[in-house]
Image (cartoon, rainbow, N blue to C red):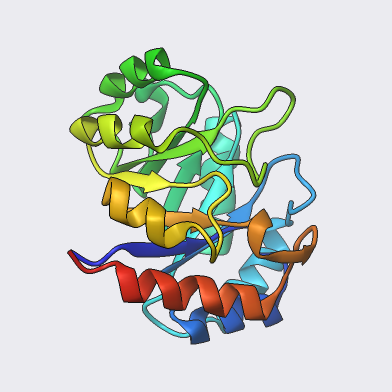
Length: 208
């Protein structure tokens, strides 16, 4: 299979179009407290400028069901990603495809992944860091991701960058990879050179 690539934390049209041009499969827009937070109105403008066949992902954290649906409709989101304590029952309420993010502290956290079987389309594994909800730029034990594959499609996040993504894919063989802060020159502003290099290295490594 070919590993899918998501570039998250998009805040401006220039970065979005560059990511699409370099070959990203999906772009993530954060609608939760973050240095990369974006308004629904701004996200809609960027999404309307994108070429066809680029998927758009809205990232939410423990948000009201109605607000998620409203933002998704306003922006025309393809996929919803929930990065808080959302239950499987919560995730089942939407017509859009859903990704559930899980921040891993230890192997015991993997047991919770079974609760989302048959409800979400993929599980995004991120690094646990107290006081943050993502975008840490820090890796976790990739062996946990190998173990997590038995629960469904796995998207790897947490500190992936051009220097380590080849090793991550070779070890875990994930459905997809996700990068954000490691591809920035400042919070919310992408480094196009790093972004292009990241995507090229995934494409060279990602067929298995």
